[in-house]
Amino acid sequence: MTDLPEPESPELASLLPEAVHRRLYTFLHARSDNPPSMREIRAHLAQEMKEAPSQTDRRLRDLYDLFEFSKPRRGRDVLYKITAVKPAEERKSARQIDRKKRAHRPGAMLL
Image 1 (tube, rainbow, N blue to C red):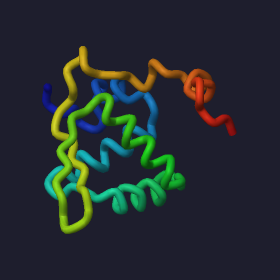
Image 2: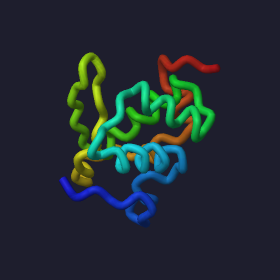
Image 3: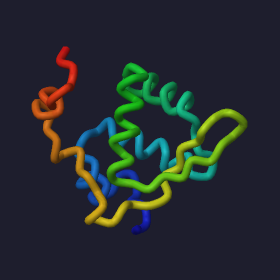
C-alpha cells in the first residue's frame, strides 16, 4: 500500500479519470480526520454534483477497487476513511470497464 495522492495531483488524475470520482476522493481526503458517514457523502455529492444517492453509492464502491478503506463506526453510522492506495496488482480500474460493456453485462438491467 502506498501513501494517498494529493487531490489535485497528476497521480490521482491517472487513477481516477472521471471528475466525479476525483471530487468524491477530494471530499474523503479532506475529511480524513473526521470521516463522513454515507449520509454525509450523499449530501455532499448531491449538493456538488446534483447526483442521485444511488449513483453516489456506486461511485463510492468504484473507489473500493483502487483504495483501502477503514470503516469505523459512530453510533449506528459507518464512517468512510480512505487509508491507502492498493498495490497496482490488487487494483481494478474503473477505466477498464467502459460504459457500454458495463451497461451490457450479462444479467445487468438495461435502462
